[in-house]
Every structure is written in C-alpha cells, then in structure tokens.
Image (cartoon, rainbow, N blue to C red; front, side):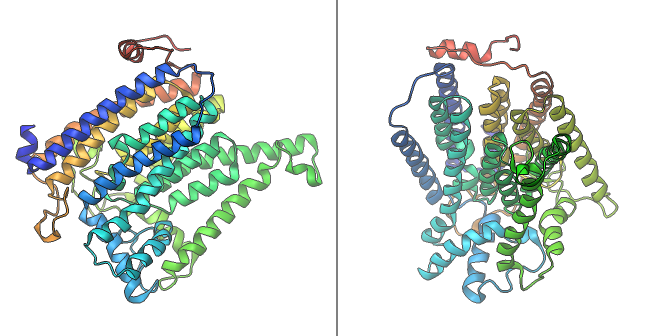
Length: 499
C-alpha cells in the first residue's frame, strides 16, 4: 500500500484499486462455489432468458457507473475523440494516413461511424460526459456480447446452470470490464470476436470461425495473434477434406457432405471474410490507398515489427528487466523476431493439436498463444492482457480443467492491480481536464509492474505445462460436486490425479 502512495496514486485511486481487487477475489470465490455446486448438474433451468437478462443488466449498470466516473487512458480515449472530430470536419476522407498505431482499426472505425455520428449530431463536446458515454457504450456492448459468447460455449459443452454462472462472472468481475468501462480500449472488440471465434471453432463451423477471427484481426493489433491457431485448424480440415474426396471418389454435389465441405468452406471463407473487411475498411482508408496488399500490410504485418516500445507498463518479461518504455536499437532484427515467434507458436500449436486433434484443445491453444504473445512479444501495454482473460474462461468451458482457472485467477488479479495502478499513477483514473495529467507511469509503479510481471511469467510457464498435459494426454483435473464454501475451496485447491 505504501508503494502505491509513493508511486503517485491518490487516495481515491488506491480506493478503486483495493475495491476492484477485493471484489475480484470475492467473485473468484463465488465462481468456485457455484462451479462446484453445478459441476454435475443435469436438471433444467427455468426462466433462462429472464436470468440472463438480469445478468446482462447487472453488467451494464456496473460498467456504466465506472464509465461515467473514469474517463480512462487519455491516449486511447484521444484516439476515439480524434476519429469523431475528423468525421465531423471532413467525413471519412483523410482520417487514415498510413500509421495504424494512431487510428482506430477498420472494424472499430465502422462501429464508431454510427456512434460518432450520433455524438456529432447531438453536438457533444470532445470531453463532455455525453461524449464519454457515447465512446464507451460500444465497448460496454462488446463486453456483454463476450459474456453471451461464454454462455453459449458453456451451455453447449457443460450445462446451462454453469453457463449462467460463467456469464455472470464475466459481467460482474472487474478484470473483465477494465478495458471497456475504465481504460477505454478497443481491445474489447477483439476479445468479443475472439470468443465467438472460439465458439464456432468448437462447433467446427469453418465459415463463422474464420469470419470472426478476421474481424478480430482488424479490430486491434492484438487480433492477429489468433491467426496461427485458426490457420492450423483450417488448413488441417482442408487437407483432410481433400484426402477424403480422393479416397471416396466424391463428385458433384456430394462434395457438400460433412466430411468433404471444408474443401470449399475454408478457402471461400478466407477470401470472402477478407473481401468484406476490406470493403468496410475502404470507408476509412480510401483516401490513403485502395491497394488491398497495402491494407493487409499496414494493419496486420507492419505492427508486428514496427512496435514502439518493448512494453509500456505491460505484464511482460521485458518489464522484469526494466525495459518498460525502452525502444530497440536501429539494428534490432524486428522481422527475425516476428518469424521466430511465428515459428514457435505454429510448432507448439501443430504438435499439441495433431497429438489429439481435439477442438477443445484448439481453444486452449488460442488462450496459450494469446498469453504467450502478451508475455514475450514486444509492444504490450497495461491493458493488452484483457484480450487473454475471456478466452481463458472459454478454454475452461470446453476443457473443464481447474488448472486453467488457476491461471485465469492469477493473471486476472495481476492484470487488475497493474492496469489500475498504472492508470492511477498517471493521474488518469478520473474525469479531470487533460492538462492536469502525467503522460507516462513513473516512480514506484515500476515495482508494481515488475512484481505483477514476475507472477504472470510464472503463471505462463505453468500454463505451458497444463496446455501440453491437456492437449497431448487428454487428462484433466475437474471439479467434483460440493455444497459448502469450505468444501468447494478444498476441492478447488486439492491436488488430484488426472482423469
């Protein structure tokens, strides 16, 4: 606590940090108790729609309170304001000039054509409470859709009672709404699209999986981290469909059968998804370039090697070595770094997936890829880890291994403490005028970030072991039914043999 005061956070900032952290812990405990209660639930849930509506309303209300009390990161908030002001002054023309790091990504831009247009129609000033609400409302809606995606996964692969519990956890636990209601980050859209991609991947729906993965990739720079898993999954089914067609000598309309249709759906989905996103993106990039290859490069490839810092107060191995805010030298082999990480991710995904070829494992590998990139790849920020948390929960819903929850709880708490402390240290956990604020985190915040990063790196190493264990052996450590709080906690932390 003393360290937070030294770092520059005010008493009100510290109150928010402490309340959010304690409430997150209480949410975790409540989740464990309810997961154990409904572990083997086989009954029906009455009034599901009404309960779900109540859960979503609670999530909406909680987020709106924080959204109106905290403007958030002025850098990220300023990107939204700049886009809305540009729309007011000159329409879509001239907004994008070739630097993807300074603008909203195309899908997010398309959403804010609506909300930004409404803000301009109501003549809201850039820093008014009304503008703040209009900017954060789409992020909050994306959050609630993330909760719905998690519900859909758990409802299909566990049971409805557990699905409602997991959706409620996403709605009320602070670790899931820091990016939307407090920080104000477009990564919220990437999280939502990634969760729907996980849902459709589990259902082996290639069209929807590729479509949502493409939307994620063009929502924020972190979205491209989904690509290795989606690529391996899609290409595997494409090749298998081709082999099935040759083996069974399939011709004509029979190619649309379940064992063969991937030969059509996979390539067509990739092409059509890009074409749709490209056409939507032309609204913002047409004054810069019509070239689709330029479009791909500047939004997907250039950010991988054109990063600004090793990390900016992120939960990263670079924070441990005090490289937060540090830039690489001119001779740093950026593209070699990109290729090395791509090779590692593809290798891990390929080896683990081809061992069992289990779709639930693929979602686990998505969570592993996202966490790996956030921890070890340059350019993470204090809010970047938001993109991993909901996918970890989706991975649990499909694999039901309690060790995934260990990782989620550990990384989630580190994320909450680090991101809120960073924001408080910069004097941005409020609605003050921008000229009163610090530009970057300073002082004791570095010790907080380093400590949280150390814990996160250890959690990642543990998650690597879990991913290999679940993916290659199929053995899991599942929760058994318990009715009491003490029994549930004992069940959660008990060391058990794999099933």
